[in-house]
Length: 228
Image (cartoon, rainbow, N blue to C red; front, side, top):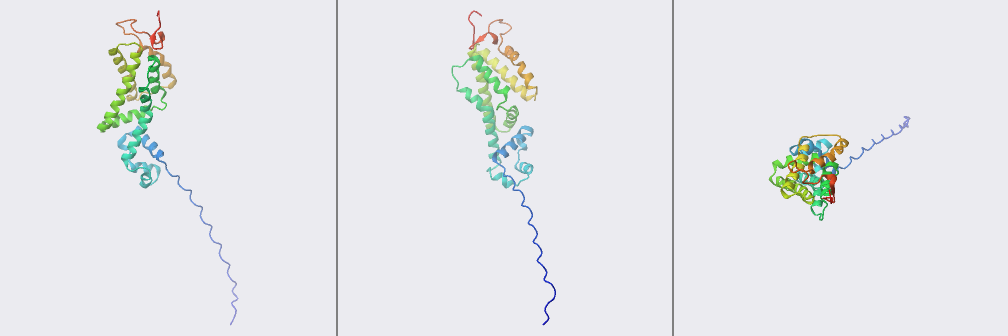
């Protein structure tokens, strides 16, 4: 039997395994909430939808349900964001006692002006959202009432009568909310430069009773200086 003279073929080198695809970063619960919050602030609660968020992240709905039981669960998380950033500072002030009227007023105003952590966009978005929910309508109303009540406390501590304190508190608050509703934007430096003048206007005496209330520059620890 003739030996096979055909040279043995060498084994073909095995193909190199393709590089493993980088594992997709697992989305956190916080990432979903942050994305939903942006949608809420820009387009309203009606546009906060699971499919659209999943498409934005290029993931399946399963990724969403890994963190949330339902869309309602996500919405509850958005409301908690609002409570943490826009309500908690005022809740803390509610429990303060023996306040200095002028300093208390300044602290309230700075929650809005500093926007740390207060978010005007989130506040306005939740206010719009509340028009579709009776429960949320009441919660927003309760927060409005608290903010106005705190302002009334500050004016009362400065020596203003009860009815005038109420009116001044409403003017202050309605001005602030109106600024958000109009989407009025202004350079922060310019805005801060107007603060002393806003204080003079909001805290100054009534025209029909000149000198009946001290100007901010006359105040010390919430009361008119002796002999002023």
